[in-house]
Length: 234
Image (cartoon, rainbow, N blue to C red; front, side, top):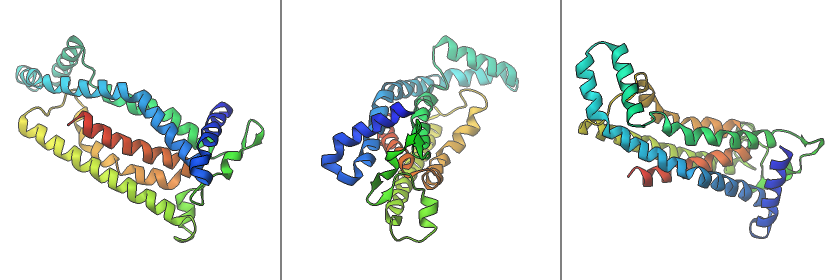
């Protein structure tokens, strides 16, 4: 973790002439953007995978007719179809999973007072006066003054992005149902698909309870995701 801390400090030093006291916060945003750029090829592959899965829906509909109420046979046939066409029904999960290590690194980095036996100097950095190691629930619990506006601004941004994502997902799902391309590609995923749009609002809770540094990662990443999906899945 000390290597990661050094990376953040070096980025902060590079950005200090432009962002001054908020240089470390800007470094976290830049780091997040770099992570998303690295993961972007996988996001593009996931978008291609979704289009490929949509193209399989007529074949899956035929399999439903063929196997009727025999769910075991249907599950086996659907999985064989995906394997035959080299389409992974879970490929869309990979970009999100690969980002988790970076998020947890930031979380632990700004949750510890020492790193490698030395004082964690990153805790001295702030964003517009809000300490990067502070948490929204603690700050807002004492009123909106001081660092409160910073967290309120983050909450408003996250809520806006979550609502955009929720509405877009609902529209996409409704359009797929009307066109007949919506279907349960792997048995058991149907229920997950219905719940997934609501998970975007979970980021509000995350931003409230994690250190501000990790919250910045979440806000930057979810905003990137919303824009990226709007472009790739248009």
